Image 1: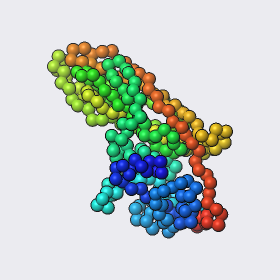
Image 2: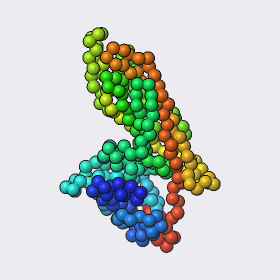
Image 3: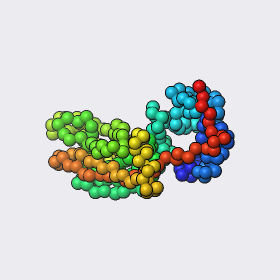
Image 4: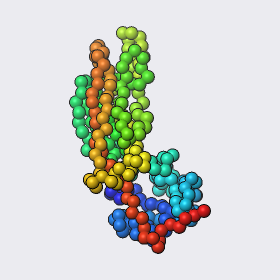
Length: 276
């Protein structure tokens, strides 16, 4: 959130964090991590409960904590959108939230890739992440004029499909495709779903938060983090007004750096006490 703070400010959005930690713990954490936006102490979890995000499964010194996530509150003080994961260890990143609220902000740092009958641009919400981070990979597809590709749900043709290789370091969420348009093919009197013009495919991935993976990051000699490459294949079939080309595919990839979690606890005299 600290690293994304300026991008939020450019949109006129302020940041504030709410935690069940005490003021003393938050003050020490802010100083150690260089946090410059407000952190609100909610040691009795009153605000957390009012927002309905209390983690009721938390026990011991973690009892009272919230599920990690984001709430986007408008100028009218109404909650516009919420972003929470069902699993405590999985969480959206601040940059991910920005790209979901303002998709146009995902257009920076795109990598261009040429494919038969298509122009591709690859982007991602984050480059450096931690275990449990939810990252959005994007694939912007631009067919030339008078070229279309078939959308998911088409019959008899090869629909466009993004398939990311499964590796132990990530968990895949469902691929998101935009709404297609219906094209009438007079030669065969068929209506088919297609994409034409520029469109975007999104793929959310959650970095592993297994105990083994987290521990492996802590014990690695390279404290900068572990580099992983997410590889995939984009399959599709392109057609123009008179020719339907053979199905094709192109290899795509995104690079991430996964850093260890901050495991430093507050001074013993201000740590959370065990709760029944």
